[in-house]
Image 1 (tube, rainbow, N blue to C red):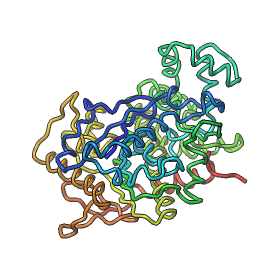
Image 2 (spheres, rainbow, N blue to C red; image 1 turned 90 degrees about the vertical axis):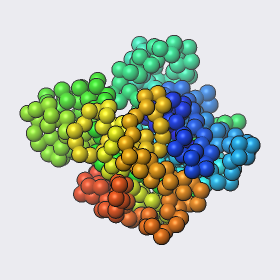
Image 3 (cartoon, rainbow, N blue to C red; image 1 turned 45 degrees about the horizontal axis):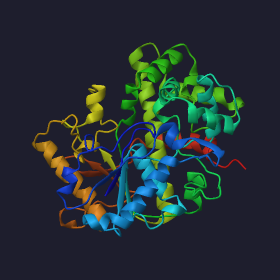
Image 4 (cartoon, rainbow, N blue to C red; image 1 turned 60 degrees about the vertical axis):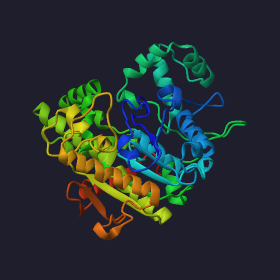
Length: 423
């Protein structure tokens, strides 16, 4: 089982200080955690051979090739590799299914809270992103070779400071479409939407799921959330514009009004505005994109996709802890530490938490070993999509999470999605 950490493709580490694997290992699997290049150093794409993009994804590919050649020396099976991740790590695992260059390197995928089509999943205009950060560094140029020289020579601290001044700074540099250069093996040669429509390249069975109010943790980005709140209270609804949408100028006011009427009917209090932002981020970054992706992937591959909604409220729900949330809802990262031990800051565990750890890790490792989370169906079976399993102490099948809001997002995305062909 190969774990890819999250962090918006901008921060993070696969260290055992954060992802202690002992709960998984107890089920007889080999766990590998991977570090990969991040931020501008992992995802700068200038459209030139010196900076072709997706270096971070290529690091993951290199790690999987090493695993294929060497994991048998560690009692692992190179012909039974499951790649799993959380957030951008889960999305990176999904991107492996879209690359010709990763065929045969993995056999299953688990994605926790990671999906294409979200604003932080893909950059259609990477050169523009590099130009914008260069301006923050005091350099105004559109020439890719000048930009390459700037980023090659600038101090890392200066570049990170410039990125830190942007909205959503963890997710400024993202996976992108690549051009083909001699002696450079590309990773992604088409838009994810096109790949899903035309036929996934490396189809594998999958587990994919999310928490109930994923957007809660967007409040941890204080600078971004404060800026958005101030702009919305001052009726500047350009704060609602989404990176994953390409809206014609003549339609922008209408779409902003729709979003305002949907999420910000009440802007008289900070609490009301914050609640609207949380719901907007939940729908546009998680619920809608995951609904669309799961449907497209299932239709494209015909393979089982096991979908879940994590409902359990316990002592190890890190998202709720970080946000000090009193909502009876789960947040981003709440499922993660029923799979791993957070060794850097050990989380408490009572008897019910221990039951959840056993339940989660048994399903994840069963899927990795046998291709089904519930290979022994005597005690119940997790049936794949279109069924959705609510993971709690008493698991049960439930309807899709907020289906009306998922449909609302999908109607907007099909009209304005930046990857949707407009011909």
